[in-house]
Length: 368
Image 1 (tube, helix red, strand yellow):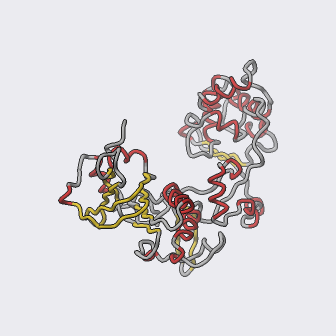
Image 2: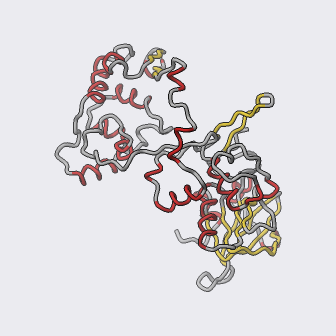
Image 3: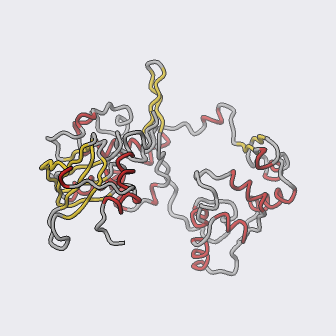
């Protein structure tokens, strides 16, 4: 049930990328006109439609997406075991720090009825400890020469923990020093210089060039990353604000107000569902952030002609252009392919909220 770029969602776009173009006599003019057409039904596209509705009440909006579901990367995953549904995220999982959101994003989240400060009501922070579980690190033979699981990361202290690992004495000492010592590895630079230096390098380069970590110790640090990217792709500036080892004594203690983490059982899919329900109320019952999780969505109501906002799935946009000279045009024509048929709609405005690499192919009039 994982819904990524499933069969049927990418073939038309691949034709477009390979040079296929739909000529005028291949396109059916639907006669539909909207105030706004949004290309892409992920969180960006749904939010664009939501903000436009706030500014222009009563506006007619069409959202086009090539997938069979809305939400983009904010996918929901449902597993059925007998008559019981087990729910999880199938894509993006959480709001990492609500206090870092800009004012418009915070307004949107609050307007949807989401209160990130209530997260503790819905999660058992002691679940793993109550089951006798704790963190650990697995050292794989391919990297460290032997398969070994060492439980209790950093317990009772880093030197005791590292003594159980297959690491060399040199690597153990480098890692212990990084975790246990409060060292300003950028001493001699002022705050602005430190900021620019950290922004211009990866966390891996910071550890190697300034914290003096060797190749073996760096392999260990790679195993401790939870960003789903390697530390050679993690900016040192981001690592600093995440409190990564080696950054705590750099003189940036004035962090923003407390971190506020929040996630739904299905990850950010519930944010997408709340956005859709707020714009198309007939799609599902309910009105709160709690009831949206189990609400049954009627997908037949997404593209209801009687709704001011409509979502049209399985529709791959292939062309976006002004009607008439760009400097004088009052309308935009959007062509999409659905069920192997090309159709067009017109709009007063359009927002391209789709994956950036497809935009040059579907809107060729954009400057380089």
